[in-house]
Length: 91
Image (cartoon, rainbow, N blue to C red; front, side):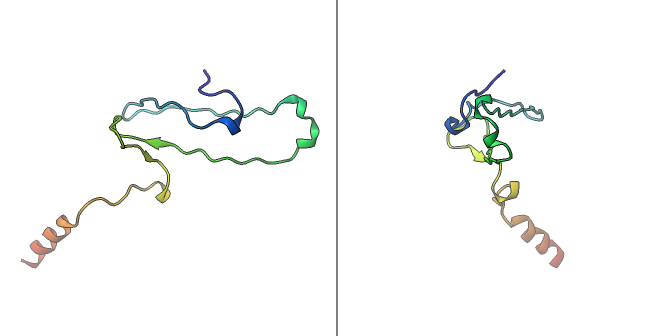
C-alpha cells in the first residue's frame, strides 16, 4: 500500500490517520532513482527531513509537532504541589 507515490520534491504531507492509544504502526519509506539517470549520479547524496505531528483526537488547533524541544513536551504544569509540600515540611 502506498500513501504517496511521486517525486519527493512534490510531496507536501500525508493525510491524517488515527492511531489508537498504546498501539504502534510501522511506516516504511522507499526512495527509488530512475534507471535512466545513469552513473553520473552515483555517489551523490540527498537529504530530507521527516516531521511527524500528533494530535488529541482531532480537536481543532490541537496538532503539535512530535519533534522540537528534543521530543520533550512543553512545561505547562504549575508549582502548586511544590508549594504544598514545602509548606507541609515547614509546618
